[in-house]
Amino acid sequence: MLLLWAGCKDIDDGLRYTALSNGNFEVGVHIADVTNFLHPSTPLNDEAVQKGTSVYLVERRIDKLPKPLTEGICSLRVDVERLAFSVIWEMTLKREIISTRYTKSIIKSCAALSYIKARDKDG
Image 1 (tube, helix red, strand yellow):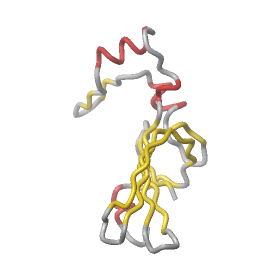
Image 2: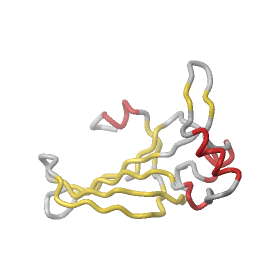
Image 3: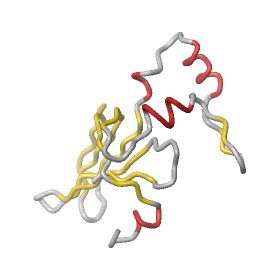
Image 4: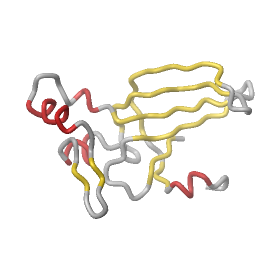
């Protein structure tokens, strides 16, 4: 199961968890991978480097990257395959990390949840 955050226009991160047969859990954090579309020494990359980050103000935001990229082809949408960069942990029930793996991935989200729904055990 990959969880996304409902109500967001540019969903750039997701969470996945799976119970393993050994009693541990596999937990994955997935971040949208824009590097496939953003190349060094191009005007788009140079502008993103200059901006550094998106800026969130009270009534608007100033995006680091163009909306078609952040809200379109890179946004982690439900039932759509997207490129991501992932960190995957195997963890015990006591949240002890057994192993860590970093990888580029292709993910397909199954749901978009609010933070409250994601926190709720009954979903």
